[in-house]
Amino acid sequence: VQTSRQQTTLSTTEYAVLGLLTSGSRSGYELHQRAASGIGYVWTAAKSQVYTVLPRLVAGGYATARVVRQQRLPDKQVYRITARGRRALVSWLEEPIEDPLNPRSTFLLKIFLGRLVRPGALVAHVESMRTALGETLSEYEDIEREIADDPDDYYGYLTLRWGLARVRASLVWADEVLAELERR
Amino acid sequence: VQTSRQQTTLSTTEYAVLGLLTSGSRSGYELHQRAASGIGYVWTAAKSQVYTVLPRLVAGGYATARVVRQQRLPDKQVYRITARGRRALVSWLEEPIEDPLNPRSTFLLKIFLGRLVRPGALVAHVESMRTALGETLSEYEDIEREIADDPDDYYGYLTLRWGLARVRASLVWADEVLAELERR
DNA sequence: GTCGACATGTAACCAGTTACATGATTAA
DNA sequence: TTAATCATGTAACTGGTTACATGTCGAC
Image (cartoon, rainbow over all chains, first blue to last red; front, side, top):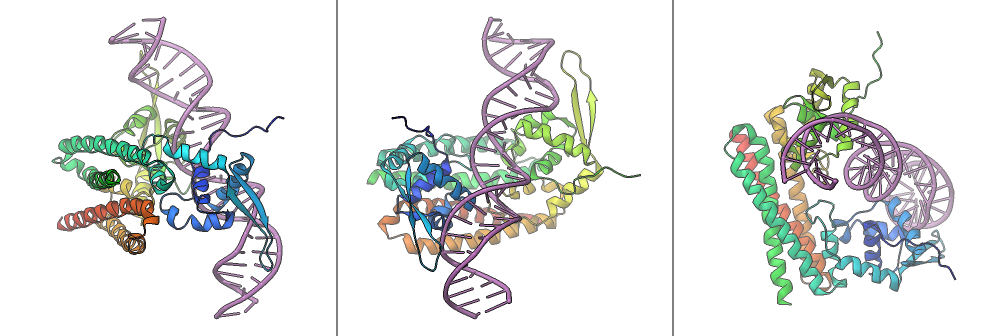
């Protein structure tokens, strides 16, 4: 028996949707609503993306769909994550994060879904973030030394200070979280 | 005499390129190199975007191109911003920023190019950012009160604390910058 | 009778990334 | 001879946003 061709890698949106499905079966509509709260702070998806992604997850064997008939309200498709979907999600969550400082990086999504992974994987993610933040901080500090006293660079310096403030705040966060995770 | 159809609104990438051209005439290649430093911390563009955008700016009358012949090295097109380009850029820079907290918002770009606008416009941008940050902070603090003690939300709380740390750092930055700008 | 929630989707578009393509010069 | 820099572009693809399309029910 020949199985149909399946995707082997999923997009971040697909993993985010699988992540939502780990809290229970949901319809496309519900997933889109949920995307506004909770996970919405770390990952958003347009309605059209959700409806595009769900049939692909079913086709790949990562989820199953079941029609729920309703009176008064239109019928809906309710999606449930499969064991295969769970395995794919967990192994993706444990994979190292490349370019953690990229504003579209998956860092926060992977932390948010931290309950699904081995604690060591989470520590590794936060440590890689801390390393990246430390490198960025010293890079920014080098630039600061160059431009701080040059009035021509005043507006560049303002934006640099924005970056410095946020990198430093994130570093404090990373140190706190690492201490907390290691205490567990 | 009928002028050819011109774009009336430009994309953010086009404004960013115009912003780079205010520091002097540049070739596409140079613009792409510069995008790695300075403005690169607040706006990046792929090589292909730069080469796509430049002829459009010329077609719209926002820039002019001149061929510079070189021995040994290939000829290059050098672009210069026009008065029209400058006017369009400045009026865009002074326009209010919608959704300043959106990670792809133009806030930092407009601060970075602050030397081109009236000081009042800059103050308005930072004030609108401070307002948006204040609203986000109290929203996050509300959520914190709900989830801080619930162990089921532990990983959500970790990501919330990341957000809190960064919002608070940005608020401190905004207050400092406003005080500084008003002292001038 | 108009609006909002429920429910599912398609189509078009825009921005951004990566790969492809070419070709000279210079340094390791 | 291999890679890097200079220089300019095109093509394909991915991800994300907005608009379009349809239809019921309940509340105001």
